[in-house]
Image (tube, rainbow, N blue to C red; front, side):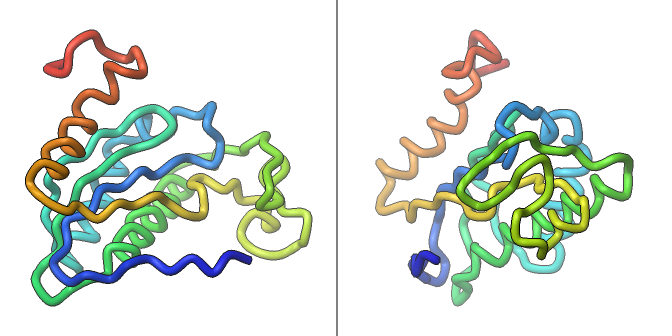
Length: 162
């Protein structure tokens, strides 16, 4: 098990990349209303500023600014992922990944017989996410621009205004 420790800076501005467990899925795009609702509910309970957010078929990028005195971006992201997962499951059949990765997910079940995947519930999100603390105005601009250019980079649109 990794012992990765995330930085904790109160009031930080943070860039995220969050991936689906099944990278061939387009669930966040199909369930955009649910994702928006999960984010809104989380923000109502634990406020933060959304500086940029782009949702692509198999992943999303965000730039958030936390309130002064608060450093828990990881908890907020976990709440959004959890709320989205629960709401998607309530709204219809859960997706079943057909991946075999180092986390033991094979066809939606773990090899070890524990956790939600063992209960025949597909894993929607990758367990972790990638984050980067914004260092300065130039870094901020680069990461916000990355959010806007990413759909162009992936061939989903031809212009950032789309």
